[in-house]
Image (cartoon, rainbow, N blue to C red; front, side):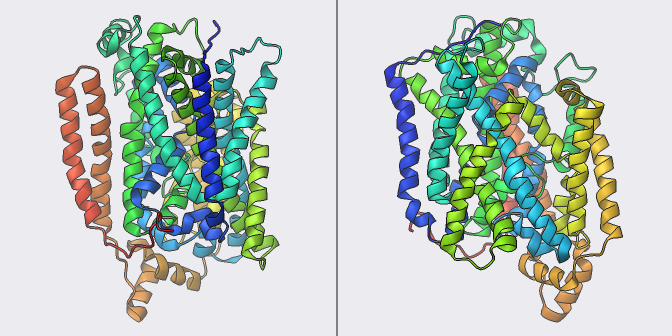
Amino acid sequence: MENLTLVLAPVDYCLVAAYFVFVISVGLIMKKRAGRSRRAYFLSGQNLPWWLLGTSMVATTFSIGTPLLVAGWSREAGIAKNWEWWVFIFGQMFTTLFFAKLWRRTNVFNDAEFINLRYSGKAAAFLRGFRAIYMGFIMNMLVMGTGLIASAKIGTIILGIGPDHPNYHLWRWGIAIVCGLTALSYSSLSGFAAIVITDFVGFVLAMTGSILIAVFVCKQPQVGGLSGLVEHIHAAMPERIDFLPSFGPAKAGIMSLWAVIAYAAVRWWAQIYGGAEPGGQSYVVQRLVSARSEKDALLGSLWFNVAHYAVRPLPWIITGLATVLIFPIEKFADHEKVYIATIDFLPIGLKGLVVASFFAAFLTTIDTRLNLGTSYFVNDFYKPFLANKKSERHYILISRIIVVAQMILSYGILLIAKDIRTLFFIYVGIGSGAGLVYILRFYWWRISAWSEIAAMSAALLCMIVFRWGIYGSEEAFTKNGVQYMFISLAVVTAVWLAATFITRPTDKEKLKSFYRLVRPAGVLWKPVSEELAAIENIRPTDNLKIAFIGWLFSNPMTFGFLFGTGKLLFGETTAGIFWLAVGLCCAVVTVWSVKKCKRSKKGGSFFGE
């Protein structure tokens, strides 16, 4: 493979440095506010408006490695390859319509504390502590490691340091350390309030950078604009420009429609992936609980999904397709590096802006993961099990120490992985088959702590056995993704169902207290709901039929906007108008279902404090 380099002028370096100064300044300004209490440090006082929390979710998923991954897939296997992650929209919209308000009612710090609210006994205590370590360190390290790998790639290309350089690995580590220390500096000082502010600015900057890259790549003579791109791709590899794959056996690396159907039917509710967990987990829950009202939680989650799937991907997809014409795949095999090299097509000044946008994407992911991981450790392990009666100042101090520890440990990922896609499939594989438990724990009284323990353990063990035992390599593991999904689903479901019915159910008084607070609807709470309705007149306030209608229409709404905009950009006017019309019609029904949701009292203003 030929070397790829990126040349920056002094003004470009100044723009990158200016953004780093900005985020550190925000951290220093917001330090006093974060030090008030753990709720201020981890949830910003629970006063986020929908547009801010939703944008913060989008920015967090807008990792520095996400454009590289999506553009790389589009370059290597065409647009349809993105169904690897597009199918997760069904689970995310399900979380929006069925769970956003429920999470806001829990008033927990995170989904690990939810365990103490929902379950009882020693199993619940064990699960809470285990999940705090599992999510706060193991899963967080995978996500942060993705960002560190991408930052090192970008940095070495900017500096013109290739793998053949004698100090390549030293530079790779040095760049990752500098980027990590920047995120560490303001996230440890300022907590969640500064994170959502920098997330908002980072999202605007990252989207601007993605669009600029797509525009200038298409201006290259090998491409000839969008019309030239479509003409060249149609002539040489027409299947790569289709949003939907065709029936029949897939070519090497190209997704088949059968695989998409299988993923769409199962993956969204059976597998776990960051930000797309069915029922909500991790940073999604943190932002839903931080909302100033239930309505803000629901609207913020809806905006997140639309922006995540319909707004962000197209510039990356266009760039990925265009690079095939500029950097032939047979000569340039590292698709992630190719995307970074396209920055060199921009004029001086804009290069620096785009590079700054990459690091903005990096920081918006790392800062959230540092804050969330610390929340897990301090609130769900350290405080309940090691130091239960300390002052708020003490817990804030420990939180800042743990932020540093997490950052240090995440560098271990650089030792075991070099490509972003490696971590993507490991992350998905770890939670494969366990998704149904996280949906049902809100809507079925019989789900217990043992159900979750069994599901998590079986899913992790299954991934290890198949990835490093039966399949033996990353290529074989990813190639058999559909097969593995169904195998893990069968194994994990059998294990957690057996554990559910063999072990004792959650204590009746615990179930009652949870129902009083959250008021989940549905017949699966009948043994508890009938008793509380008769004695205390407590009834659910949500309408599952309306939520289902909203979910049913919100998915084609989002795909309608995505496909419609894409078709118009590619010159297919009739198809573009059709898909946009589908999106608009479905949007009307979706908005109606959201408006039917009961309003709740709002909290204070985020900017008023």
